Amino acid sequence: MKQADWSKRFEREMAMAEQARSQGNEGKARVCARRAAGIVAGEYMQRQGVSTPNATAYDRVRLLANWPNIPAGVSEVVEHMTLRVDSDYSLPEEVDLVADARWLAQTLLSSA
Image 1 (tube, rainbow, N blue to C red):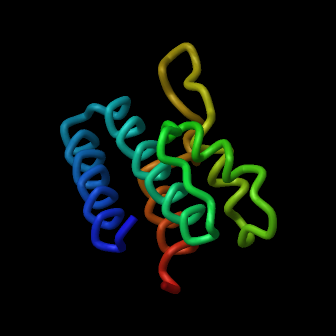
Image 2: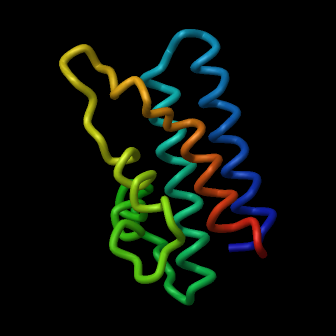
């Protein structure tokens, strides 16, 4: 995947996440943030020589959870991305998937 391609797709998802959040639609914001994280995970794996063309965003994030030698903190963010909402359709207050997706992109892909 070309740098511009993954970056454009990532930024598009993040813009939709932030717009959804500003409109009070936290559920849609979470979905977009998870898709953005999947884009980051896919690009990171591609840079490691592993192609995942048919995997979903969720599949890519789950693969990243077991990736060898990932930077510190990535496992925790990946865990956040796979959390299920509670009966009120909420995540724990300290979990912000939009911020986590941005952090994941910066941590895994900013060096290239």
